[in-house]
Image 1 (cartoon, helix red, strand yellow):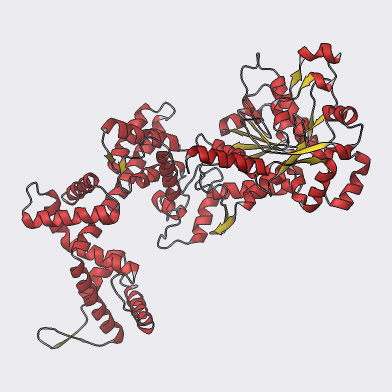
Image 2 (cartoon, one colour):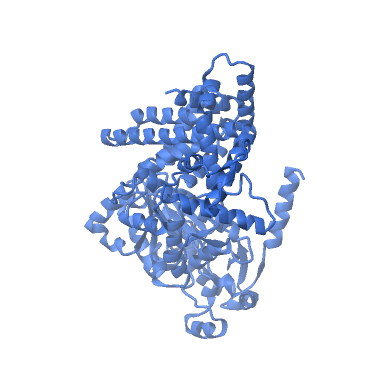
Length: 631
């Protein structure tokens, strides 16, 4: 199907969604589908909930946010459960401005944009359908047509509460166009669209001397005063301010705390009473979610000003900190690169992970406990197993600092440095060392980094480099060991024979002489020490291996090289330690002989096929690991 065919199909689908009828017909629809009369806050909450939710490690993960925001599960759970959910239930929090507070490039704007785009899509679904009085510039709720004295009866019959009064314009239209017969008033289905200014608005303050309050509340249309004879005639008023147009949906208030006071006072009435003053009319009802965002410095300055006290109680502040998980930070960089024009550049494995490690280290606060350092804390936060620590320790660490994640290096800085590396090198492949070098150079040019922070960040680059050194050695180790796979299997079989004899208190038979010999303790310990099994823990580890072998045998399976992750790691490390001299010679020889060249080619092929490298990055990795081993 061509693009024009798809456009035509989309147009057909839009036409099918349209609905128009009288208020009487609309009430039949409400009886059948009561959710179409929900409030703006309820619609936002249901939109998030309907996208799906799952629980991971005791934290709710809302799928609505999962493709754009990473590592913010706790902050998002708090936002949904402490603001959107109670607001949807008509509790008092809906009468508050939602203020997202967090560091730069932390995801605040992305979150608001997701809510806006989400509402646009949701209003096109059955569950998110929105209906309004036809021809109303404020897309007014048709239920406002029910007179106040009948609203209790309406609640008893329909189970729906009506809040807000008919706007001056629709009050006039009801009398003049419909002769007061509310059942005849035309109602239509509307679709939210920021571009068309339907149900979604954005207000951004500009020069306080030149900006007019009309941007928020609408203005008099002076060209029609001669026709209608009065400024208080609603037909002579343009209901086109952001508060008017965002009715039934949401309005983003950009840089709210930098805004002139006269604009903020309108929000007091709107949030508390659900109405605002415009022109020479009675208060105009509006049902909308107001979202603002700011950074911590601006917020502190705002609350320290006594003149703003009335607004303090009308605001709910939701902290949106930086992500503190390495694996989630990696996803942020992958997403940013995917959306750029450098998506075709080969980024060697672990490059983004190492950059993410540096970034997360800058955001973490030094643990108060003496038995843990920043690297361990970083791993625990990322859900990795760290010997001697449990999930309870992670919870304790998170409670040490309430503001952790509100400072540090932002993702944009890292992506800028990655981009700089790609452009400067003018190559189709970059690795972790290139990026670490670029991050280090960037610290010199960063205007807001103090000398103290710079020294700390340089130390974090060194820590990230050490982590990369270990990863690089492991990567090459795996590739080399695979080339010697038969040796690895032989070594494991030998170890298992000895473990079985040790646990069963029996002897082994020498394959050459046939005489009985004791289990080879030296061999077993040389393997176990590779993964930190202590002398005291060796018996338990060996028994665990034997139990695993028995379990496999009962199921009719064969215990092999991949059956026990830790044992496989120990075998690989032991074999790599034995092969270290071979690796040193092979990776650092400028003119390798035929045998060495064959081995290098095997390892390079393995790195490309199994580990995601290309020819350039695989050879760079081998040279680097060779230099590490020769130090």
